Image (cartoon, rainbow, N blue to C red; front, side, top):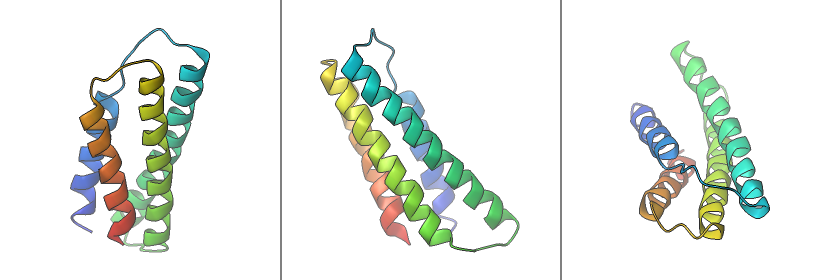
Length: 109
């Protein structure tokens, strides 16, 4: 479990540092909205897990971690699609690294 928290920290830094403000089009907006919604769900689940672990509860940790990672993977895929739709090629390596971190988190349990 000690490996979980540094991974989460790295993941959040990658997620929030990779969002680029641009003029949006409807398809871009759709993907970006999907990214924010799913990222929010993943973050909420991970915060709940962190709180539970802090108080000693390990109830369904792996199941919830996999659920959060699934939302995170879908969110990152939407962000990548949004940026590709917009023609942006910057930060793709960082986005792919973030996607790989979510997959690692999913497969960790």
